[in-house]
Amino acid sequence: MSALLEISGLCVSHARGTQRFLALEQVGFALEAGEVLAVVGESGSGKSTLLASIPRLFADPESRIEAGSIRLAGRELAGLPEDQLRALRGSSIGLVFQDAQAALNPVLRVGMQVTEGLSAHAADALALLARVGLPEPARAAAAYPHQLSGGMRQRALLALALARRPKLLLADEPTSALDPVLGREILALLCGAAEREGMGLVLVTHEIGLALRHAQRVAVMYAGRIVEIASAAELARQPRHPYSAALLAADPARTRRGERFAAIPGSAPAAGEHRSGCAFAPRCARARERCTRERPLLESGCACFFPLEVRP
Ligand SMILES: Nc1ncnc2c1ncn2[C@@H]1O[C@H](COP(=O)(O)OP(=O)(O)O)[C@@H](O)[C@H]1O
Ligand code: SF4
Ligand SMILES: [Mg+2]
Image (cartoon, rainbow, N blue to C red; front, top):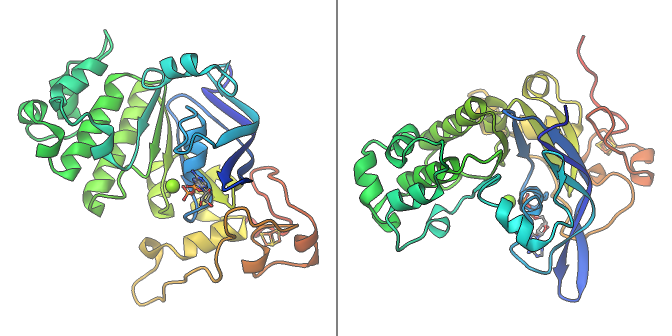
């Protein structure tokens, strides 16, 4: 059986002035139905570009897919005409982004918006609103988006996305605008729904701790590439790529009290900055001569010439 989502060799460029640069290079992974894949990495690593490229909803119409394949349930999306892709958005592909205010229709009551999205088999809007943890679903359904708090709006957006029963749900930092406790609750809801409904979920977060807690697998991105992809359990136990190890060490949630927060030295390359060899080399304590000469490719889940040893 083929995977729900299969991406391979994906290269995406953004325009900057009259120039173009590759924001994604040779990105590939597969996602099964019911599986949660988290995508982590510092800001600017290409996480949002990756999510936007799947339904081809780029913020800038100049952005484009240069190469590669995106297959959803066996159907190729890269190169699919815009009208066919539009039909898939919201039906087969659900989207939950950070800004619920912008995603909800401001002049329609929340309940109406959820009902509009309901497929024939789904539960009714009130039940869905209750399921995403809205304490007073009837009141929320009757409200306009601006009458709800940020957390309530985010839950309503979630209900809206789930009402359409997408095969694939794409969530880009869906909780980063919320307080951490509420954020974790909503992530747990999302991941629970994915498992229950057999929906694939790609969850972007810049917090590796959240990724490890909620996802089955984690893809670590750096400078437009996946540098490591592993099960959450493996990654937590033994990261192999030096960048994954640095991200884990820099996660405040994993730093014990009294220990110093280990920020990653240096900074990620600027957009379009091109260098030969491994993009992480200038910040990598393990870098050797080969790293500045040759580019490591993602092989057996890790793109590094000198990965950290796997503990027996
Ligand atoms: N619409 C755009 N036009 C030009 N550059 C962009 C655009 N969107 C993102 N970028 C650049 O592409 C790179 C990847 O950005 P993004 O995918 O937003 O990363 P992330 O979500 O991981 O923070 C960054 O260098 C960013 O500045
Ligand atoms: S390839 Fe070299 S520079 Fe890059 S992460 Fe591995 S050891 Fe570090
Ligand atoms: Mg982003």
